[in-house]
Length: 117
Length: 117
Image 1 (cartoon, each protein chain N blue to C red):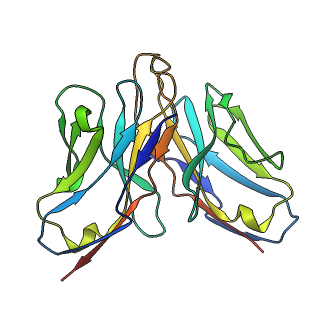
Image 2: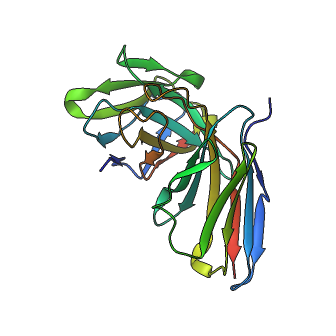
């Protein structure tokens, strides 16, 4: 089975440009998470979805960031306009939510390394 | 709010020596606890998890961890380290409402493990 797929793996862009990161979760998973990893702040949650519905976007740094999940097999994280401080590794993770009384592990994608010049 | 502390930023051990990586968490209810490993330029791989039951859990690659509620700790151990274990190790706790099923992870800042001959 394919794991979580992220694209692109590396992105270099100039300040002010729009950046779109893509994620394909593991087939059958119904929870999807976007995390950001930086040296200063470590791994932080940006937003997560259950059944394609955004549940908590309190980690999204500002209005320049937006995320969508139009269907169960695809999600995007968009930054517009991008700034140098957005440079980080962005991870997507998915899991299977069975019930409110269960907890299943999250599977992480390889990440997208974003560099904003 | 949930938090995870990994007090050791960097640890160096000799190949064949034993290893213990410390993790302390802050969480009001019974926690879901995880250890992930990240090799350079790679995503996160789950080593082991604790949901309930036996407080000593076994994971992949010969790792184990012990949940100690009284100390709010979940330390990772390995009896004999191999050079290939050199990586970054992250402890994480499942955050959110206890009865909300899959929720985002709160990560510690990580411990970088170096292995010398």
